[in-house]
Amino acid sequence: MKLLNPGPVTLTERVRRAFAAPDTCHREPEFAELVLRVKSKIAAIYDDVKDAYVPVLLTGSGTAAVESMLSSLTFRGGKTLIVANGVYGERAAMMLEAQGKEFTLVKGHWEKALDLRTAETHLAAGGYTHIFTVHHETTTGRLNDVGALGAIAKKYDVPMLLDAVSSFAGEEIRFADWNLEACAATANKCIHGVPGIAFVLAHKSAFTRKTGASSVYLDLFRYEKEQRTGFSPFTQATHCMFALEEALDELRDAGGWQARKAHYRSLTSQVVVACAKLDVPLLLGDVGWYSSMLTSYKLPAGITYEQVHASLKNDGFVIYAGQGNFQGAIFRIAVMGDLNTDDMDRLAEGLTRAIRPRG
Ligand SMILES: *Cc1c(COP(=O)(O)O)cnc(C)c1O
Image 1: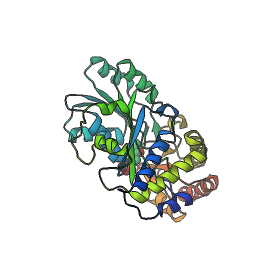
Image 2: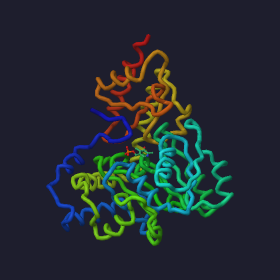
Image 3: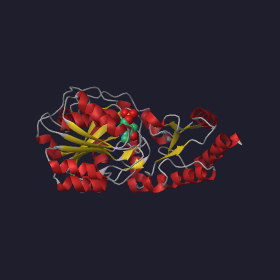
Image 4: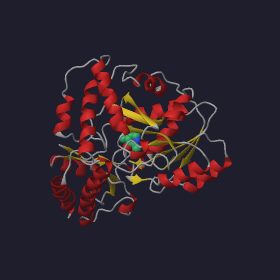
């Protein structure tokens, strides 16, 4: 089965073999050494991370990393500006609400770009201690203009927290230019690891404050401190860690994030062409709005998501439904994981079978 959902992804044989690693105790030095290697390999993905940022590894999915980042790095008495245009941006507001912290939500239209003007109006009014947004808003596939928002954040000297869960290792991230204090990511999207590990890459200076965490398990500060020597406060997803190191090596061997982005772009172009031939329109209208790794399409009249999904599943592909208001109205195709040109050719044939029968 080839997974075309935005994580978990189809594993390569290399990563799958690494997952079947020997049983290892997370309190033993050999596991701590593995963690230290994984940390340095994550930090090496983007050039401008260098020694300024530190990866903090957590056991959980991407949401654990986002929630831990928001919980630990924002603080009571502070105020966060959330600039959202989809499910994941709005989820951050739910998290800060649950933590009882002050925030303003700029709730943008899901089919529109980030509302930079409203964001700037809020920042200009003052009082904000963080700004939060989503890099690749997986709800639609839009790659948000974090560069423009980052410039505004810089102008008002407000550090940014970024949900980069579905873009990390597959899109450019400019840590300094975007005023990033931290970004959250996961092992099983663009890195192609096994689900079970997520991480926050945070500026080291953030850990000179006191933690803002209202959670024991998701307190980033505690993990950061203990992981300086490769150990963690709680049981680690040990097998996932072996798989993650292999996936990071595979990423490096393949040419890093730039090569991965180019690979995604080329696979996505095949999907876009296939859907255009079938008169299936892109939700956002123009391919230029999209990330390299995910596109969304309006379902043609007279055919349900369930029908398209079932037909493609029969051909060995799992596609992804719309969320919220888009449920039943769109489908999404992600090209992360072990996928190649031939897979996309077969997908194009499958899409034709799924969509053309309507006559
Ligand atoms: C996938 C994703 C998450 C986290 O989802 P999990 O299911 O917890 O891994 C968060 N933000 C974005 C933008 C995502 O695409």
